Length: 360
Figure: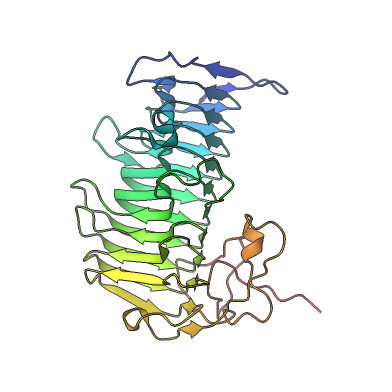
């Protein structure tokens, strides 16, 4: 039976480090046992980490982790899960970009037993305004990052590096100029590029919506050649400052398929340097891409997105009935539903949304 630490209904228990607890290297709430469940707590003002999962099969749900000096929630042990939580304004050691180092809001990495965190899950969280990475996974294997909203984080909203067998799906990442983070940091949407001698491989990035970041998706050179990356059925819409999508380095077997890349104005749709091995096909580009990014089945034109409701909500990016993205994709076994959970048709749509025609 698991050990459960659960908030009493209607109450809001707070664990407050008052900016002087714990000692360096620890978390304000350390979980070292196995099969421990934490639900409904608020963890704040740690002088180091907020919550640390160091045992196996530990779960954090509906936890608020904020205003901690370093990581908000850290998954270190195998089979750790963080879900339905709110993680904001952590890594305060770097608030306003004053430090030469920083940490992240929500991290899965570095099992203390063998150095690799196995089977971590980061699901249905909202992560914002952290003065480092928003969601950061590295030195891990069999990682799932899904159904999160990560926005307005200092360096990037999702960072994947030095790890294997990653599924990153149905996440919404963006930057809002009204955030107090605006004007600081790199502000990249989804970023990849190894930092250590652990070559990444088998990375699947599908059904994500990345909007208004400095670069909406970036694959950097890093320390290793990354092998086997599938980037499919995503929406990369209107990056700012730099451009839409960046590929840099001699990475191998990168497939870029069924994506919508919309970039209004003069910024480039895509930037490719150092000849990465990328196969392009069935993408919808809002204007003609450079020859090296063109592929079979491409469509050039306005994707005709819904643009109704809140600009910073996934519904804004739904397809309308006249979108050229409809029936323009090729079926992939990895992509059987869309961002909203709709089943993909036998002839699927390009992008993260499968348009559902109304029943007459």
